[in-house]
Length: 263
Length: 166
Image (tube, rainbow over all chains, first blue to last red; front, side, top):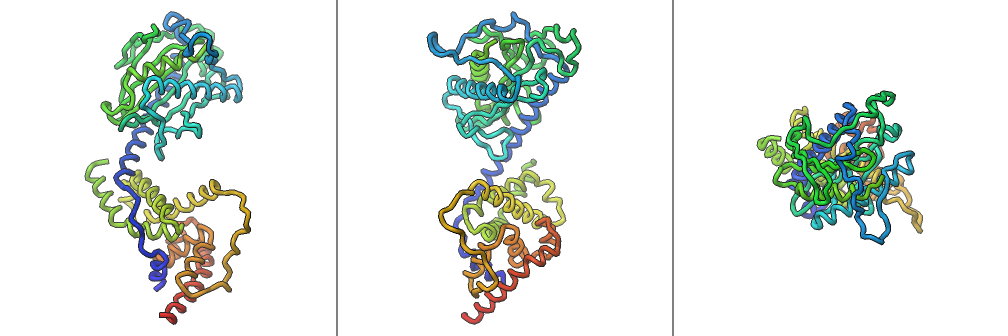
């Protein structure tokens, strides 16, 4: 009796706009993205817990990376400062803008996208990727990191940016250990599987690592940046043939962003 | 998820889509919002499909997801839509406003808060018991009874009026 009354309120429903197949596809991508994100976190956690990868020998990186602007134009380079919340937020914004510019140059057809319940944060209101300082409470172990969904053509994946290493800092888990402070870690493939050493067009040494976490295919490219740090750009996708960015594009992006970072 | 499980999920959703859309509409009284709620529900069900299909009552589980999504989204949409207004809001519904018709039920639903509206829809449209409604909404059975009493009065009046006018 009352149900009839409720049905009268409902009236005749309009055609449904719920696309179940699209929702399922999107959720599958999101699940893959989350796994890619976990993979990235695992990489960072491993490196931090092992106390390695926190410095790059000077000869492994270009000591004077070319600034990404023409001569005479304003110097857009910045330092990776994380002395306090304000400086960390300013650095994160610089990194975000640098990453955005690098993507436009390396892959003009690519764009940051929202993926509901996806594995990465949505782009900011300005359409930029979210980058944030992590572990800011311990400046010795602070680093910058961010993940954002990227789409090119019909392919969507998660792009992650991470900086690793601190200037001459000790092992974050043992900051008083002077031996660790002096230990140089080279940017090379020693002990790493599916790792390729290379040289970027600007002469910078690169490390390209391919991996898989669950059904997520990961491609990451690393370069050295000033102050004995490493910059990593990683892209995860659910199919190796459906990655939104090629290794060449990822390399171009990481080298471009690295060029913004000064000592 | 295996192909067979995914097919089973699609079959399950297909069989309940109309019911979910109707109940979502009664909760929010906006078809776009209703379809958004159903989309959110479908996504959550897919994410937890292995758990849903093992549930004692998958339909109650699904309704719980839908109703809680409504409560969550209504709080969020209120925050995001909150703005100053030049005019005073409409006066809240009071028992003396009863008018026996479909319009009175619509007005009643509009006048109620999200949770109270959900109580009426669950109890009197979807026929859930007091205990089931309390579980879905995470409130006590006593609260369900008190919140549904007022709605029941109006429904009785509406039905009575409808029978006179028919």
